[in-house]
Length: 222
Image 1 (cartoon, rainbow, N blue to C red):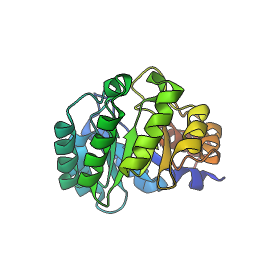
Image 2 (image 1 turned 180 degrees about the horizontal axis):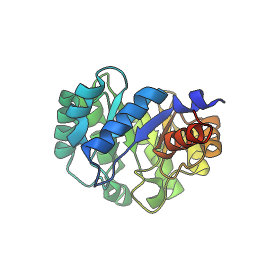
Image 3 (image 1 turned 90 degrees about the vertical axis):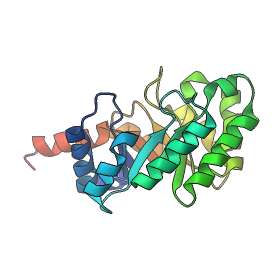
């Protein structure tokens, strides 16, 4: 798989608390230049970013991020507001406490509510695998599938660990045909990126892949 193909699966991401508009603008410029799948940015920058990039790159944002314990109504409002501001894709965080309580019906209903708000826009569901057992992950694969979401996503990148090859393999064995996979958090090399894609991931949430490409070009005098 060549560099261009890998970049086409990257959600080029900047979600740090200290992110400034200048940094977000650079993420947008890089997303356009390297033809990434999207740029994933904080909700407060969506309107400004969409006006800046127009239709030159897909704008993704996060909902209930990073802890996921907001009410469903708050997440639904966030989602609708982000879409009105111009977001093309939504990455939501589930309520992990509900998972620990065994309330998978509530998790599923929340996903369904946000997918209804998204309509034809892509909804990715972040389940934060590092905090879950394999049994919980499998149940969430079913919940995400049944609720009609477009993607299941491993991680926020803000918890104790990020994506693993094992989690993507587990997802692939339990999600429905309507659901794609996004690996996120800690993807730091082209080799890792390529392996995640080979295992079936369709998107990669990372800031490092574009940085690696830029460094390689700088080193070669490009």
